[in-house]
Length: 291
Length: 269
View 1 (cartoon, rainbow over the protein chains, first blue to last red):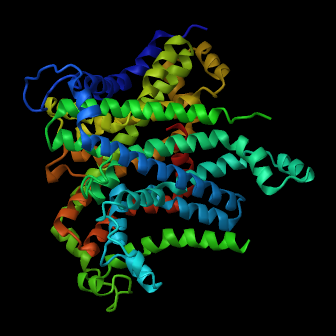
View 2: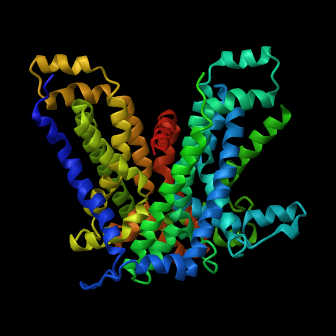
View 3: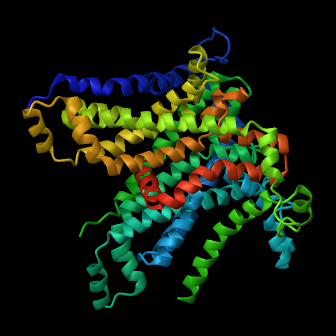
């Protein structure tokens, strides 16, 4: 059936804004990444792949930043995913208590990251913070720390905050995935005398793989984008120990006015994310079975 | 069994204690907080932080800015995205696929990638320190995900219905407003909530484009309280409560929709 040509008008307003405020800047990030533009003056020069060379070989802070980001990502992806899955399996049935608990666990997701940053800055505060106080009450004084001020552990303290912030959301996705697994598969497993672990490995996990792929991919991207938390809690310090790629781009562009270089890091950032997402989809897809 | 219940309780406390701490600290004085950060307020609840923050800050203004930016961004994103989703599902050919690909590509690009050129573009267009500027960028940035969710839904609507209306002489616009939109209400509401949470809480774009107090939104204002109040947590937490109140109230009443909306966002994001 022929559709009236007026249908193309439906794309206009969205396409217009999307092109100007999204596509154009994204493409020009690529363009500026080959220049030495400072973001203020009209003049700039092409420096070829100079910015990329600098990022990949000459910039120790950038290398540190990528390392921090990987530490943060691994910790969040591993612990948040495991915790979300474990708790999803416990609150799986739609009882009144479970519905309430799921709503409670989900709650932090609706807060702004600035609010979450303040809450956890207070928890981690070396003198006022409840974390050190509770450790003191439990007689675990030796564990007391300057959680955000110690450059060896600050990035992990931030990762814990991120997990507190988003685990509930992932839990809900797992609940949806688990509830979609047909009940009779578990009955068959039971009749066949499968152990709990066998049932999980052979029934739950393969059928859960699609949700797991989504959770892990989403968590990874989220952990690369944890700009707000880092910005509000540590500003990348101490000693760049919590600087992640996103905050580093901001610093290079808006504190050092090195727009060209910041653009090249942005492009590398996008490549890293695309690569990791691709790897994960590949790895998890091979584990997929259909019954 | 006991271990499971214990774990559930521990997780519940991990969420509840910090939230309770925020509420309690906001009704304590600074001295009390320093003396006993965990204790209950000794002389009853002190509401002075709330009156102080409204006196010292243009809270009502920040609140208004956040409300305007959020409402306009959500409404216009939904409007434009649903038109695109309708267009794609109507076209249902290679053109539609290309447009769908073009829009959803945007979901892969983190906002920090284009913030640098976007900033200079906004300067050139004179759209810094402007609520309109924030709204336009918000729409462009959230269109991809909204198009993705809505297209997925609209493609499941029965084609025969649209075709029958075409035969009856209805134009595309009529089919869109009278059929497609009302039928897509479940996915529109889920997307709306996802967008609400995202825009209300957004920090990056106000941080980039707004320096004038008159145009600051709540998250940016809150961030800057940190510079002003430093470790005056009673004041900071008062700000947190005021900034979160609308979302929290909405969550309590529309919980089911929130969970659906935020999960749809994650599933598709």
